[in-house]
Length: 265
Image (tube, rainbow, N blue to C red; front, side, top):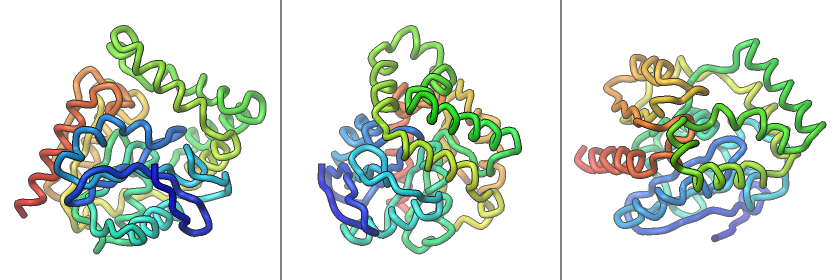
């Protein structure tokens, strides 16, 4: 796994393949391992890059950040390794970062994939829940947050039929540094609302959502689709919030078809 120093942080990232860069940003509290299936499959034709965001996975130290500063980190990393312009995809928290990237660096995008995410900022209830989870980190470390989040992460099919995915997801979540988890909760709580940016997106957009996503449900994906000009919407059957891990073949196929359409334009 390559490492490079960007903005005073040693960033770890996966990179495989050649061609048009496809950059995939992980969610919270995860790291680049959530994209292993997509890296394996898409790298036959594309240059697939999956960073560990600041403080997550192998990227240390766990210093404070914001959603917007994450976008700056990603842009600096991609510029340094010569991966711009790119097709940028973001899952959940990674989707927020992708929208921040689109606002700040629109000329460096070929397309935007928003995966199990939303454009709105936190509601008052959402902010209260972030505060609750910060207290859980103080009391029980990262495991406290994992136990709070885990029941809503996966579809029933995954829980009953894919124990390997259940184990892998828990392993990735529980391995994240507690201080980074706290910083992320603050960043998510205080993030901007990007809904107003959707109508003016300058690049093609793909929206992917798990059919049983309880955290960012299909109705939110459909709402983003109505605001974006000519989006592509893919609803993934038998998937909850973790569609890229639960149904990796379906998510990969949606990304591949989107990338192929971009090549035609």
